[in-house]
Image (cartoon, rainbow, N blue to C red; front, side, top):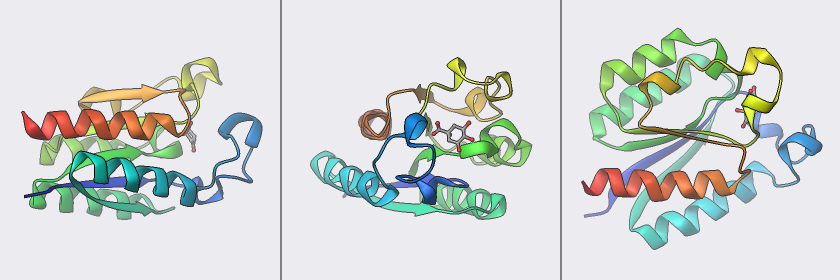
Length: 146
Ligand code: DQA
């Protein structure tokens, strides 16, 4: 049976392609979704790809992943640096989760250096652009197979 994976994207990631292309590149979120869909297919994962600008949606989707025993790949956007609610949702559900950032947050402003998600993530991938999502899918597939 295919294992479920939710790929979740937080605020402003719907603007990819036009948002600070020097930082985030030219790929749109639809491009990232397509690449993820191909990768997930090759890994035998049943993937759902979602984006929201609202913190509570991301919390609800992590709860859903917990109920479904799904893995999560998440780019929490700016909520990475602010959201104790996301931290608590991940900790409270125990979902296997890979945190992804397109940019190298550690090479940017100091307010991006702290993540509330990293301490409760299974792993973290930063600075590799859309390829980071594909590496995260490899990782979550391996974790779900363990
Ligand atoms: C981001 C990095 C965050 O600091 C920022 O707020 C984003 C995107 C990234 O993918 O590099 O929205 O998560």
